[in-house]
Length: 138
Image (cartoon, rainbow, N blue to C red; front, side, top):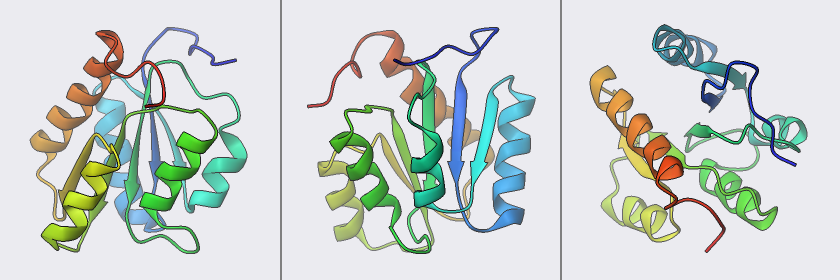
């Protein structure tokens, strides 16, 4: 059963093996009032997310040790966890981006990411939860 955070602020799950990058995104999201959980791999995130927050978003690096960010997105959907999912990558391959969007990730952003754009994309992803566009696995 999904859980709400105590004060009902959205949770941002960050999956990124780069401690420095994870820390900077975490700091940004915390400044905006979000709860943040950082994970260094998809597998570690999956171990901890049996009961995700009801209002949450995943920000994941595409290139992760082991399972990729896109594989993580697929694994969540297979578990019937339909969280909005933003992929960050250093790879500007358009074909890969289109493929990710076709697999229903909320967004795909090439690094370096401009903070205000990331904020806007996370807010848009969370808004989809509010208006019911993300309510079930397609």
